[in-house]
Image (tube, rainbow, N blue to C red; front, side):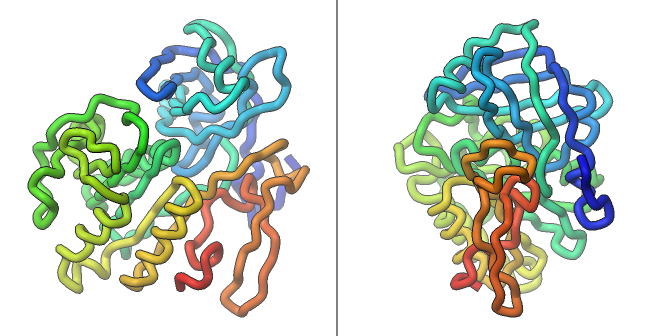
Length: 300
C-alpha cells in the first residue's frame, strides 16, 4: 500500500492471505460464525476493522465483513455474517479445512479513551461483531474500563442467550437475557428486540440505552462514551441519544463496497467538519469509524 503512515497508519497494514477455515457454525436466521487462520490479519486487527473476502473462487467480487474477535498469539480471527445473497450463500457452504482468500485488516478502528472508562457498546444485527471485539479489548485493560454491552436484533440472536448473573440496577426486572460470551468475560450485557424473545427488552436498543443512562448520576454519566455499529436508522438514533446526554460517540458505518481499499470511492459518504465545511470520505479507509457528529451534524 502506498500510504502516509503518519496520518493513516491503518492503510499500511492491509495483507492478502489464504485463510484456512478452522470452524464454521450456523445459527437461526441464516447467520454464521466463521473462524479463520489468518495470522497477519489477526496480528494487526483492531475493534472496528474488517476483512474483504472472496466468498467463492468462482465469484471474484469480495464481501466486507467485520472482525468479531482476533487472537494475535494463535493467529485466528472470527467473523459473524448473515446470508443476504448469492455471495454469502456460497460462503456459508465453505467447509472446515477449505481456504478463503481475504484482504485485511482494513479500516480506521474504534478507540477507547481512558477519560471515559464506561464505554456503552451498542450493536444492531450484523453490527454486533465490532462490539464484541471492543468489549474484548476493554477487558484486557485489567479493570481500566467498565463496559456495558447492549445488542439488538429483529432476527434470532447468533447465540443462545442465557439469564445474566450480573445485576444492572434500574433496568426492567424481566430484561435478563445476556450474551453468554459476555457473561463468561464478566461484562454486563443485555439484549433488545421487538420480537418478544424471552428475557429480552421489548423495544429499541436506544430506548434500553436511555434507561441505563438515566440510572447513572452526573459523575458516572460523564465517564460514558458511546460506540455503535448497525443499520443507518439505528446509528442516527444513537447519535441523537449521545447528543441528548452530551456524550462523545463513535459510529461504525455499514456501506456497500467494491474495492474496500479506497480506489473506487464507491463507499463515499459526506462528512461534516466542526468548522462547517464538508468533505466526501471513503468508509473503507477513512472509516468505517467516524465521530457521530461528523455523520449526523443535526444531532450534535
